[in-house]
Amino acid sequence: RNNLAALFFFYKNVSPTDITKSQVSKYLLHLIRFKKISESTQNQIINSIKAYWERVLNREKEWIDIKRPKKPKKLPNVLSTEEVVDLIWASDNLKHKLALLLIYSAGLRKAELLNLLKRDINIKRRSIHVKSGKGKKDRYVVLAETVVPFLKDYLKQYRPARWLFEGRGGGKYSGSSLQRLFEKALEKSQVNPYATIHTLRHSYATHCIEQGHHIKQVQDA
Image (cartoon, rainbow, N blue to C red; front, side, top):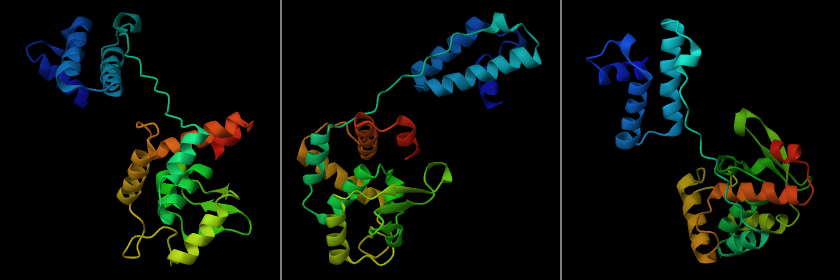
């Protein structure tokens, strides 16, 4: 409704029923040039117009067909195993190093790491209980054997009370703090400057598939 109202106001001297496909194209071009609207917004506007023409005005679908913009297909940045090692070892702080190790080795999302409780880690079973992940689903992921020594040293040195990663005041570690530690490690390691925290998860998935793991298993992780 809002999309249609904006279009009708743009052509306020033209009856809504008289607006043509050419005028719609000019309207979209105007929004792209001056408001920098995204591909998804363009599609939303087109869907609104098609619904008005087809369902309200009962026009033929072929007559109002508009060529839709294609969504850009962006490949996620993926680090090599050597780059991952350089990135993680760039941090001298045990807490920071462990955070990056867990994100990569367990394929964790940023929020999943920050929401981990101390009790979610089972060292004996080598498992991590991830609660309310994507889609509000709980899952168990493997605690990598190579991470265990770092985890034990961290628990002994930092002694977190509730959250696995806690801030200075004792509460949950903040997303901004995690972002800062990642940026410092990224700069110091001098690996791909376009990498993000989520790049570690993409790299984990890619490396798992390269090692022969089934893609469905990786997707469920």
